[in-house]
Image 1 (spheres, each protein chain N blue to C red):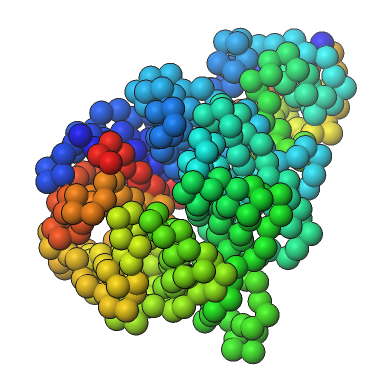
Image 2 (cartoon, rainbow over the protein chains, first blue to last red; image 1 turned 120 degrees about the vertical axis):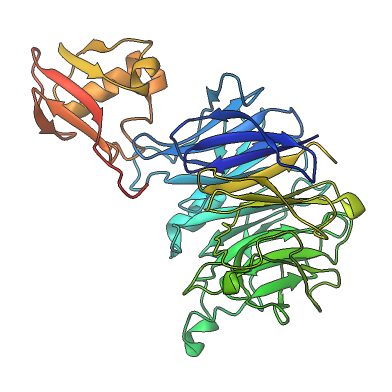
Length: 356
Length: 88
């Protein structure tokens, strides 16, 4: 049985099912509220969700059961008395040592060492944020990707739109940038070289080869073979190298899946055709994987955290949700697709668990 | 002490109370007092800067108030979510 936790514009939905058939909606929480992200903590089994009330601000909650009682977490705030307020939490990711990380706007990282009950701001990164000119993207200054290093909890990579990639090897005590090779085509050519205004849309690390990482950029797909130190463009062969989400097969460091959108001027699936693209050679070639997905007149937008996987290898499952409220899944690594849910509120995030 | 009236989810955070008697000379002092008496309210009305959240309205005796608005001992202070939406 696979569980999907869907953060949507109007609440958190927990779905369950088996690949190949429509999933059952098991519960809805935070009715009416925007739930930006939700996940299962693999260390505790808890569900962790982040909700940004338009009235009361961003909060993190946790529950043993998504259908049960949710408790507000502590510490999810910026230092009091400053000139900035926390706008939103974008993502929550399990670290390599049982900890949890949360990333948010304005470019902030929190860590929890008690299963999401309390959180502490990463002060070193916050000082970079305060002292440097970080520019927000259209969705705000969002820290949306947090990429642990399996087995080495001190190593972490994060990505911020639009402040690029940041790397730490001392558990967040110090940070350095990791942007060499990324080309921001949205800037004039003579402004690209020295800029730090880098709009990463999503970043992931290969589980079996942690030096290998992938980025979906704001125009461009990139691969790193040196743990984020430098990046090589691998978008040739895609119908568009603009998009938001990205997923990897943990069994294969050469694998990546992207969902191209037409471009930043038209953020829908190209030509009204929904299609996932897969590489198994580190981005040298891309193969369309659309069997079972809407083939025409489907102008969907898939947001950066609305694509996830469960399992790996030949049993890799892939799931993505669109702002149309449709959720699609594959039980065979993208070979074929089925409709997991329809007519939900706009889907902000998808996480899958249960079939490792 | 002024009478602070809370609505919606704030009522649950205020231990189920719809009205709370709080001392304070300004709206901000009242809201800080409310947070002190009911810590679960912290962060829901005032943000980290000490500002009333953008889509929260505070009325003092029926008039819109801000953080610095003076409050008297017999005043009634209502905290309400703003009329918002249309885009979502």
